[in-house]
Length: 165
Image (cartoon, rainbow, N blue to C red; front, side):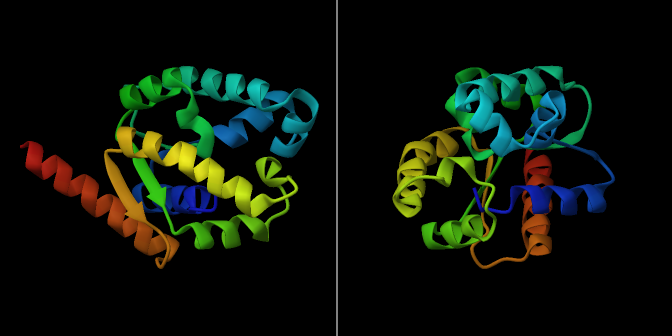
């Protein structure tokens, strides 16, 4: 949350011409409501189920950009699906940067708590080891523009392909 996944995904789509699938957007479209409405009406578990369904619908044979919510790694099935779909990129940033970015928008249901800063910190502690375990590529977005992050991702993917040859 706040690492720049959606913005960087759009940037990568423009640069590569590949189709972009955003699991949050797909979930919202499926239910005809916003992510905060889904969380409010059905809860996080229902959202996670829809998130998994959207991953199942994507074709591993097709090159694409997939943008996910930060909690996608909480389900082992999602991780397995993502690995089959391609290279997993972890966009990370300093905690204070993530909090500042995530706080700019008021539509973060998981931060609607008494102490959002503490909540984010706890989420990072729980999720970071999962991200580290599954990521093929890591990019720290703390001090980079969306274009610079896209450059870094594309460069690392090219390096990875060249190394395999």
